[in-house]
Every structure is written in C-alpha cells, then in structure tokens.
Length: 264
Ligand code: KIV
Image (tube, rainbow, N blue to C red; front, top):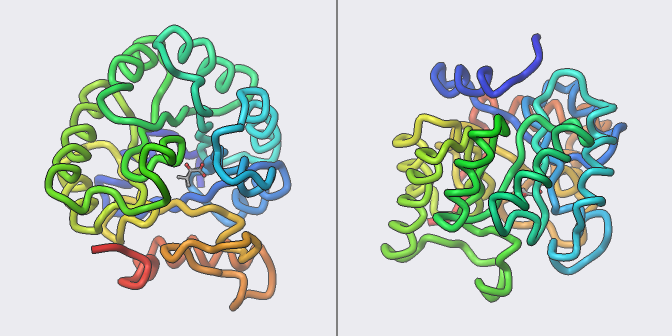
C-alpha cells in the first residue's frame, strides 16, 4: 500500500472506497494507526480537551500544534497528515500563510484544516495559491463553541442547512481539497457529499460521507464523556491495534456509522 496523498483520497471518492481517519497526537499512536492502515491522521486541536484537560479547544497554541504534529510525523509512514490550525491562528490570509507554512515545514503536515464558512474563503484561496492544501471544516466547529452556546447539531433548520451547503460549495470553489463535516443531519451531509467533487469526511454526519473521522481517545473509551456519534472499539478488541483495525474495517465496509451514530 503506497503513501496516501490528496490524489489517493480523490481516487477513493471516485471509486467509492471509504476513507478512514482518526486523530493522533504522538508518535506511538501514529505508528499504531499507520500500521492499521488508517488513511488520514488528523492532529486535531481536540488535543486541548483530550490531552490537556481543557473544557474547550480555545487555549491550544500554534507551538502546541507544531510540537504534536512533529511527533505524529515521526510515527507515520503511509497515512496523510492533516494539521489543525488553532483558534485565532488564521484571522487574515497573511497570518494564515505564515502559520500554515509552519505546519508543513516544521510539523511535517501535508494539509492544514481551518474551521469556518465564507469568512475563510479568501484565506483558503490564498493558501491554495501558495501551494498549501486546505481541509475546510463546517457544521459544529468547536472553535465557535461560545457562538453556538454548546455542542449542538448544526443545520437542522432550512436556513442553517442552506448556509452550510452554500459554504461547502464556496470553499470547494476557493480551492479546499477536502471537507470535514461535523454534527450535521445525515441527509444534509449526504447531499453535500454528492454535490462536491472533493472528499467529504464526516464526524457525526452519517454514513453517506466519503469517509469518517473520530477522536482516537473516544474510540478507545478513555475520554470522560464519549459523544453519542462515536463508538468504543476497544471494548470488543484485545489490543489497541486490533481496535483501530476494527474501526478501519467498519468504516471501509460501511458498518460504521449506523443509525444510532447519526442525527436527523
Ligand atoms: O480537533 C479535532 O480532533 C477535530 C475533529 C474532531 C474533526 O477537528
């Protein structure tokens, strides 16, 4: 199995092969995920909650993210690495370019992920023009948690559903190479996945997305509160590696997510 690149993911979307992704924050877990044939490792700013014990992702810094991305890079040979740009690190195209470049040069990431809709379109275009591939992130974007007033499903009303759909199209036009859709109704996610040409990776967004991403510590059952859209894969496995392999095969065979892990 060769190195996963953005071209591999585009081919997978075309052929209908599901993309399996998990977060990781260090070299050992990255190696386990890589050996279990995870396609994409996301060095998520969820590390603020998962590793640092914060209530939100808002305190995560650029240096935290570069430090963890570099560790993941050392453990990873095959998977594509996506680095999550932290809160307030991409408020202007120029600031985003400087910080995104650090993810690629110092951290070893191949793609950077930015949260937000039309407000980040110019930045996505600017990074793309400078050769930096961007994964957009729509729906329940945790860096806007105080705007949402809690971790609630987004896009249930037609106005917000249209907004997410329009933002998805706009970000694809701006040059985003992939999209993460978090906690949106499964039908909206299915419609966006069908309309976009870029791969759409869901988390709490139903089974029709081109792939799935979950927080590693949730699938290992070691976070304090496991979200309803996630599943503990360690319960029925005899090792972490087997749990991750079972997750990969459940995503690839469309056995995960099921109706109980998605929202109407
Ligand atoms: O930070 C993160 O881990 C994420 C995923 C949950 C999509 O953004």
